[in-house]
View 1 (spheres, rainbow, N blue to C red):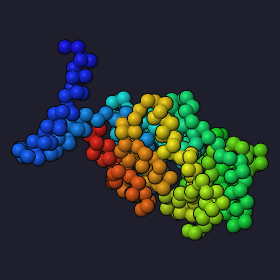
View 2 (view 1 turned 60 degrees about the vertical axis):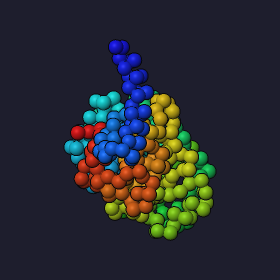
View 3 (view 1 turned 45 degrees about the vertical axis):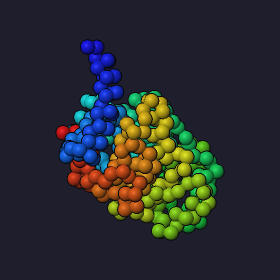
View 4 (view 1 turned 30 degrees about the vertical axis):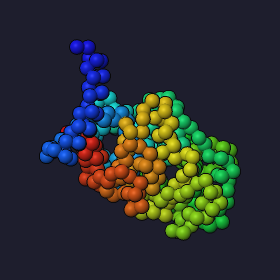
Length: 305
């Protein structure tokens, strides 16, 4: 029989078969529910995976577990697209992309999306918002790093907290802020904020919110997230471009900058080490980044052995 006919026949019969199994198990037969769930998983064909970097792929010592590399390779061999989806600037993650053999990215917390060298989405920040934040930061002794497509622009480079941030994320392309770059900013991270100070920026710009950096020693740092430009919105653009449905997408994250991403995809996994406020936005909770979190999450979907 022609393989296309077989597939079409299988696709039409299996849903009816599962319905009958569930009905019979409820009224007539003691059928094993685990077997039904397994059949449902077989019918689901995932096509794309989005992975945050820090606290999701990268452990605190900046290394990647072998189980994570194995899981990514297994999914790629199955033909599943894999994207890195990060708050980091894309010019600072080339080494990770090379190590994992990944060519598709969402960077700057959703402001720029690329699929195998092709731009899908790019949305610089409004220059008036950037200028407004610069004024608020100056008045409150906060520091900023602003990311363009090519470099990291700091309001101050000699501050100890700025140096700690640069060291923690191994940032190389760092420069002092110049007004010439004001209309090229794709993302911003703020430093030296106390717990109640994000409200200063959120009140000034109601269409943004701040997400605390989920890295030990850097809790005073906050990423600027736009309501209409974030990882979730970028994923929408990617899925439309690749003609993939939400139900066929998976994502893993650990920080509050991941909440839109995890709540949008079909299967959202919060890492066990995730921010406490993140879990409510994820469909699943997996183990920690130091305990094969990605591998275990994908295994629960039947995608790795």
